[in-house]
Amino acid sequence: MSTSTTTHEPAAPSTAAPETATPATPAAGPSDKDRQRRDKARARRLHKHLRRARVRPRIALLNRWGWYELLLTAAFSTTRQIGALHLGTSAAPTSHRGLFAGRDWHHRWAVFLDVFTLYLDGGLKNPNIVVVGDIGAGKSSFIKTLLVIRALLLGRRVVIVDKKSQRRADGTVEGEYALLARELGVTPIRFATGGGAGGSRINPLDPAIGAGQVSRYELLRAILAEALGRPIRPLEGRALRIAVDVAIADAEAGGQVATIREVIAQLADPGPSAQGRLSQYEALEDLAGWGREAAAELSRMVEEDLAGLVDGPTSPDINLTAGLTVFDISALPEDGPAVPIVMAIVNTWLRGTLAAQADTVPTVFVVDEAGLVMEGSFAKVTRRNQKVARGEALSNVSGMQHVSDTQGDPYALATLREAGTVVVYRQEKPDEARACVQTFGLPAQCVSLIQTLPDGAALVRVGGGKPFVLNHVRSDWEVSVANTDDAMTSEATIALHDAGEAA
Image (tube, rainbow, N blue to C red; front, side):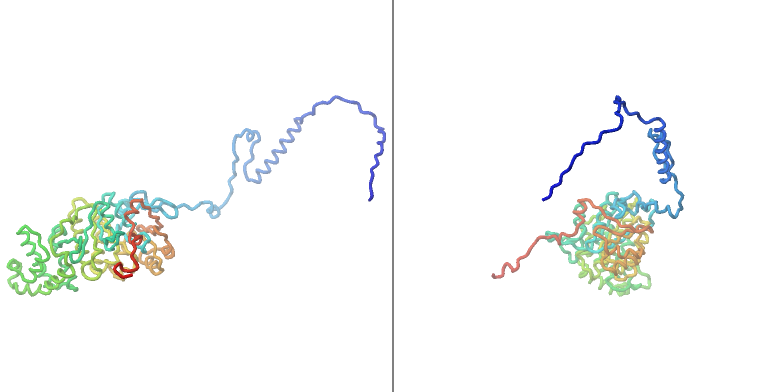
């Protein structure tokens, strides 16, 4: 093991002269020249930095005092280059007037929709509305809340034709709008063939239905055409006109209201009162021959297809003067003449009401599930209503699941195309989405959007404006009266085996 040692040699004696001890003095500060040089260097560095930043140089003294902030020097550019600095902005899709419908899905603007207000503001010329949507997408809820409940808040008249039946949790089967009507204190007018439970009867010759004797004759003529299944011949039309005039005159003479049964009796066996309405070349036998087939077919229809609907006086519980009127036709068979005839009666009453009103009241006429009733003669009537909508302050609202529900009926398709406001909820099938785009004239890129819309959101186009996505907003009470899932949320159960079956 090796070890190392360090040898310390004594220091050599110093040859320097001994220093003289001097007292300590404080260090002298920078001179004025040093400060000037330092400030100039600092200013040169700042000036160089400002030149690089393209800003105006500052005066050091004013900058030290906080006299101003940095002033940026404008940079030269072109309109093409500087366009990227303008961030995109979007205006509200509607004005602030009308009924609150919800919010713009993308920009959160509040959306207000009321066709009568839009018309007054010059933003809409056609007050008719079409609402299309798959089951559960929100179509009926939109109609109930915005076009019924909120329209009533503005004093509008609302008339509803309710074709879709709804089974409640307690087992009651009624129209979809029945619950809403009762919540608003209105009893629905329910039609059922055969005088079913709770069914109402309406007399097509009741003065409250039409605006006069001419409207009542037109209504009977429409009923007879449905009964015959063909156009009415001229002599049949003359026989019907005389029968209606005689039946009404005889009933009024006795202080009564004529019914369709009296008209049938006059068609089958014209009485002496009809003689005075014939020319000298016509006899009662001729009149009876003209109306014999019409009387037989009309009698059969009243006794079978329309039993309990139009075969007597109007039910006393029917009120046609309220602000809300709901015609529940959900119990009527989809096939046969019952639905078209009741729709003809409703339209005749509505035309008479609008013609007889002293002050024009804006009216909303809602036909939900219109695809089930918008065909044949009623499609023609509906299109006629759309043609005169502006003159009568009438907004026709047609709700349906798919455009294909019209089954290619030319009058029904024309009704959809001529609507001023279009509301499209989700259409999952590509063919249905494309049909909406083609029928309503929407941009082609909307096809994929329509297929993927979430529940409660709809693509809306008002007039000729650009379409936008609306997120419909409802209150808790509106949700409670607008939802139609009672049957699907029922918790009722049934035993596996019949209770009377032996175990």
